[in-house]
Structures are given as C-alpha cells and as structure tokens.
Image 1 (cartoon, helix red, strand yellow):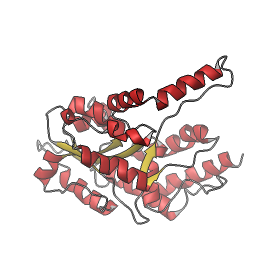
Image 2 (image 1 turned 180 degrees about the vertical axis):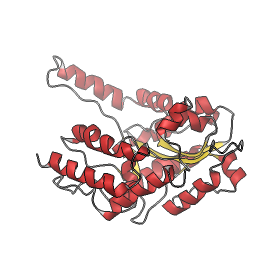
Image 3 (image 1 turned 45 degrees about the horizontal axis):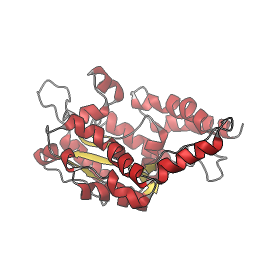
Image 4 (image 1 turned 30 degrees about the vertical axis):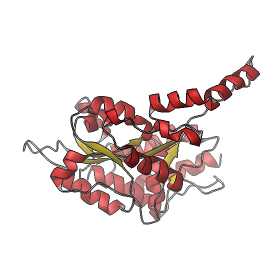
Length: 291
C-alpha cells in the first residue's frame, strides 16, 4: 500500500509565513503557498528556491491531479479517451502554469542541469513542498539529516473533490515457472509471516498489504518525522481518498508512446497550451484503445 503526499520543509514555510498544508487546502491554496515560497535568494535574477514539486513524468502519479479537477484519462469501459474534456485540460494547464507561468516548480531539465533529482533538491532545502510516496521517507531522512525541520502533509483537494494517489507492488508467478507451488509458498511466507512483515515495513518505510502491521511502516523517531502526521497524511487519508488509473492491457504501450511523448512537451516548455497537447493525446489514445 503506497500512498502519495507532501514532504514539507518547515523552516522554509515558517520563513515565508506559510502554514503546513492540510486536506482542506485546495489547488489555489497550494499555488499561493508555492508563490510565497519561491525566491531568488542570491539576487542574481534566477530562481534558486521553489515552492512546490508535483509528479509529471509518470501518468499514475499525475492522475490524482486530473481527478481533483474532475477529469479522467478514459471512460470506465476503456474504449474512449477523456483527454479532450475541459476538466482534464484544466489539470494539465494547472501544472504547466506552475512550471512556466508562475515558475514556482522546477522542471526536471532544470534540476538535471544543477546535478540534482527532485528528492535530493528537496533534501538540500531547495523545494518547500515536495510530493512523493510514503516509502521515500527512509531515503529522504538519510539525505535530509539535520539540515532542517520537516514533516509530512496531505495533498490538496480540487474542484471535484479530494483524490490521493495510492499504488502498490505485487508478486507474480510466470506461467513458465518450473516450480509454481514452491514459488507460491515462498510468496505466501513472505507476505504473511509476522516477523517478515515487521522487517519489510521498517526497512522500506512502507505499509505492508497486511493492515494489522501498518504501524511498522511509520517513520522511526530518528528520521525527524512525526509518525502521527505521517499516518494521517499517508495512511488514513490514502485509505479514504485513494485513487489510481484504470489499468488495461495496452497501458504499458500507452504510457511511453502517448503520455510521455505528448506531455513531455509541456514539462520542458516546448508547448505551453495544455489544450493542444491534450487534443493530441486524445486522438492517439483513441487510436490505441480502438485498434
């Protein structure tokens, strides 16, 4: 069980007079906070501290934003694209504007240019509000160290309600396996043995699929994260508001050939009008779904 949410630099928020996000925040509240947090700290005319970072490069991570605005990728029957819906377009325009109109979010190319990923940029104190998964907590704690005070917080709601990314991982047994029964027993032992579940949760800062052991995925005190804030933002709200795309047999083909190919142009600033990109994605998605 892998929900997403915000990791927040409390020192930067306090300095900017910004409150810690709550589930009652909407997308406009997030924008206002991001504007307040974005700064040219050395006065050289270039932004070197950004307010927010949201997921763009993988569609499942972006999906909660689309749902917040009332849009979708396709219909329930997975036969027709919904990328031409005004609500879907609005979601893509919102994040495009964070990047290029408001300049409150660093692009992946910009971060690459300074030799950092988004997670390490947050850990270096360059991003105030950073979205990623619960199981990044352990890694982030190792690079944040004692550089600043931090916590976790919920992602915001949108005009259509509040939706929160949830994902997860699973084992599978290939049909060509020579020992399917043994493979099954190994999987069952790994996923149900109480001693294993405690270790899996603690080592990966991850919530195991067995809900009785969720507490072992909460951050330990040494991370500097408040476990109750973490539980509320990630676990409790993830269970209540969790969403993920409707996956289908052509999804793994669609992701690189449509989503990444088309929408990367928004994320690198090659195209600034989300309606144009969404119309192209609409046509390509329909072509793929109906082929």
